[in-house]
Each structure stands twice: as structure tokens, then as C-alpha cells.
Image 1: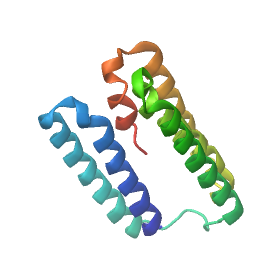
Image 2 (image 1 turned 135 degrees about the vertical axis):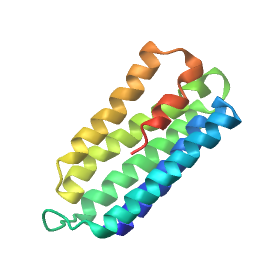
Image 3 (image 1 turned 120 degrees about the vertical axis):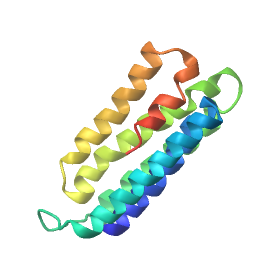
Image 4 (image 1 turned 60 degrees about the vertical axis):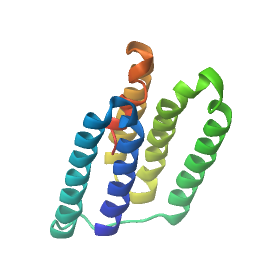
Length: 145
């Protein structure tokens, strides 16, 4: 349980750093510090809380989910990193990461991943639909899992 918390926490801190880099040094420092503290709390709690049900793991489903995510992120970076399309990069990556959580439903046998994946996808779509472009990088990053 603790290994999963460590992996998720590392990705969450990196995602926060990527998304808040345009908010200025003060906001970046505050938000990064808060994300590190929350991540440390999650890691400590994961070591102390016993799972409610025995863990299940489907390696094939996990591998497919991660491979799907990696290939789509690579293609998104390749297609969106130049010119005016760069503004779409973090929201699209957030959608891809959200989709990857749907595969984790079968990998870990937990329906909680439906909610996480849906929330990440929905937040990114709403961000691009409603908010000004200068917030596009920041908001999906604040929804880090």
C-alpha cells in the first residue's frame, strides 16, 4: 500500500510543479510546499491504514493501461509542443491520465478509479471550455491525484 502512495505522491508533486510554474514564484512555492506536505501525509497514512478488502492486481490490465497512457502522452507531446497548440498540452495530458485511471478499475479491482478518471477528464474539459487560456496549465495541475 505504501509503494502505491509513494508513486502517486511523486506524480502529484511533479504535476503540481508543472502546472503552477506560470503562477509566479510566490504561488509556485506555496502550492508546491502544500502538495509536498499533503503527499507526505498520504504516504504516512498509507502505512498505517489497513485496506478494507484484500488487494487484487491484474498485471495485464495494469500494463495495458500504462502503455496506453505512455503512448498517448508521447503522441500528444509530439503533436502539440510546437506553436499555438502548446497551450493544449497540459489539459490534454490530464485527460489522457484520467482515461488511464479507467484501466486501473480492472487492474486493481476498485471502482474508485472511475471517479478519479472522470474528475480529471471533466476538470480538463471544463477548464478548456470555460476559463481563459492563461489558466489552462494551472487548473488541471491542481487536480493532481
